[in-house]
Image (tube, rainbow over all chains, first blue to last red; front, side):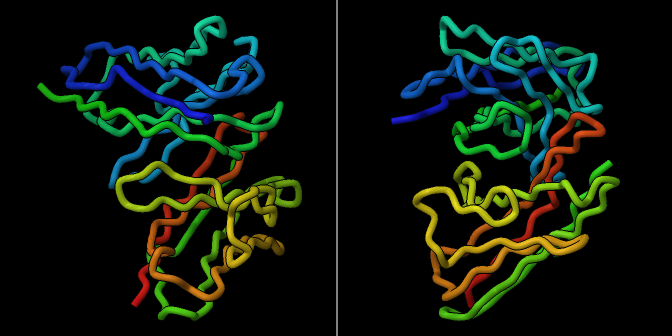
Length: 121
Length: 110
């Protein structure tokens, strides 16, 4: 069964850092481009980062550029998102999602269950 | 730059046909492909339609997508109670190298 499972969310103070993980199972993680997407009741779904299979290509939303870093370890079937310099606006549920094509298309066919991040003092 | 605009809500009675619009503002509108996601409360989004009108395997044919000009649509025929959910359109903006989501439409089954 193909699955994605996020972890690492929690409470972080403004200006702090957090590392989110996404563990893939049931499919060949090496072959898929991946994204991070977050959701809040106010803003809805917001795409924030994309990484190619080899990590050669990465893209970020302007809202997180320079603060968040996406990476992957294909040997561990894992995707990561390093959050730094967080603000209250980064409070959200963070999802990892799979892109089933070899180019970015926002055609996310597999999602994790999400991990919540709360930024508060 | 792509902007996707959806109505905040839609509703219908069981058996009815409901249509949700996604207005596309993009410099390359002709080559913009729209994807649709369904999200029931407490769950992650699920891919419903991709490339404007393609259904992934396992998605009932009650769900259909289309795109014409500057607007894409998701239609739900034979509305069922389990279709009560939030629906989001999305696309990839090649000029920004960024994903874009619409604000979402909450469908209520009356």
